[in-house]
Length: 271
Image (cartoon, rainbow, N blue to C red; front, top):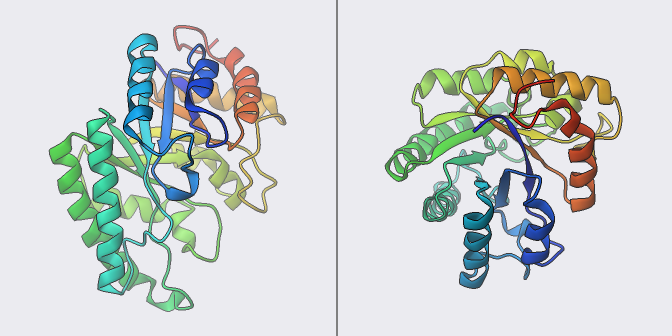
């Protein structure tokens, strides 16, 4: 499949209504696994999964998944907290496999609260957790993708600039481990997008805008020339990837889609 734009499932409208709106344009839908993004409209009930599969069979779109991250610290010093995080991730991986999802994006661990000086310990435990997750993912045929983060006190700066991700790529030289590049996070952190795009094993993208201060997840409405050039670059270099329009409101996703769509030919080749 050629490079394509995708939608993040929203929590504030019925599933059938959402799918009817997006399936004619988007070729990929990203499902949330974090509790804060679930709702009565979508909580992985059997009826909702059946609806999703009917639409998927009819319209032939792909699914990806964003892993849980609330209270899900893979590098926590406390072994019970770390074990609970792993169990949440195992459950989400199993669900992804049952839905034939192949790309599974997760966040790097946050630092120990109030103890930034022990981040290396957090990272050592995170690496042990990733090794366990990778074994599970490999057996299920799922690829783990770690995401670059915005500038935030909870995260070490090297989760924003790509240096932590490069360490992990060296530690886990496995085709079932790669990167999701979040363009909005890079912009907020003041990190060169071009430098991130030079990294290996990039398989997926998240796209949204912000005020360069906070991780706002705004629609794409400004600097359209810059965004257009970026989309053309992604289309040429990452021909099998998809870019999820990661906004909470469907109207923002649709606005962004219509602004970016002119920069992609129907074949997926840049204009």
